[in-house]
Image (tube, rainbow, N blue to C red; front, side, top):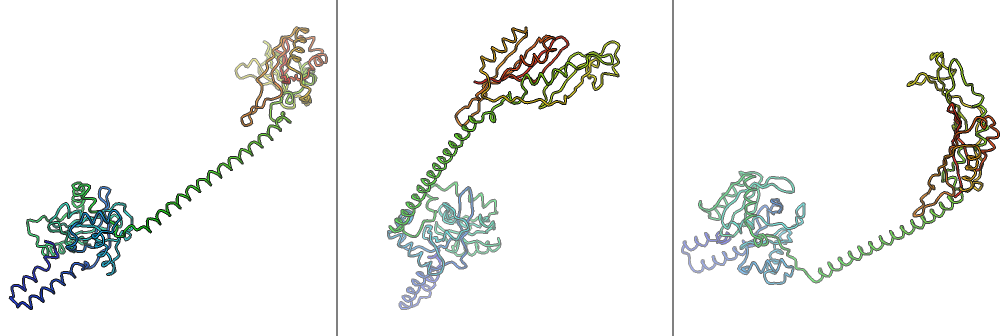
Length: 493
């Protein structure tokens, strides 16, 4: 028997026992029927705001507005199907919406419906701080899993963190209209549970549980694990408003507009990217053409021009060799072991290595010489020359061909009995985009050794013999037995 029927059973019994007349009994029956009709639409006192708890990843709702059902609402599955699918034009859906409209007229807005045996649970989903996707009614779920019983659970609010002492009661699967309420203290919840037990007529054999917070969590978890998919589906709120053709058309137009904006934005973005890429390619192509023109016009600024960084062979011999010939051969018991004239920038530097004779004192090496740390019998001396070295003024167009320079050097080597070491490097390249620009000349190194003393003594003739286009000298050396010179060569490609 539902709670609404039990609440009016006592007055009817009292009138029958009083033995009043038929007229009074008829009027009493009419009054009881009117009172029963009013009780079915009566709202719970002190309506509480909707709350949400979260257990095992599911959102469970508390504090729904429960209303008594009518005799016309026997087919609950049909009502669930009609309201859940969005058609909502059946008799049961019309009854559900009519009840929701009566509740809204009292000042409690609602847009969702939860069904239980003989009860309608109404709620407004937007009243929650968060918007759960698939919430369930905890009261309806407990009524389906445990048809008769009384629960006092300590549940933590998922939005505010507040602890609710929640009271639930049902008899034979019918929820009490005063259940699904929470209290701030445990004592208030227990007192309210005692009044529910008395009003529902629950005896000591009926299941009653008062749980702590952890025990409540375990109990709700067990209920969720026990319920099957169909039970969980029946406890989910369904919308009260029907899905009209106007709403469907509006939603379709909104979706089409969103898709149009998305496609249009994507097309516009792709066009802008292609335009920027084309602009960058055009700029890059123009820049590459400009750079290539600059490289071909002034290759000396982009490739190593070895002949411009060293003096011509004849100028180097004229500037360095006379000073080397005038350098003393001995001093303070030391003898000259080797002498080198080297280019350092725009100047020349003489580097002498002295060797101590048996009668020499290591404490008094030649002036300006410094003993070697590893071999103190030798001393090093550096003497910069005051005369500046003239850089090679040869133009790129005057560079000789590779075969021509090799023939000239081979001829001088054969005539004066010299040894020639000539090596050319790889052609220098400069990448410009996907193209490789090669230098219009080839650099190399050259060494002429075994120069005789008579050739060095006539330094003017030696300078004239080495005056070849593309030949630059950087070093003249005497090792105590013979002379040698080292430099660079540059030939056109």
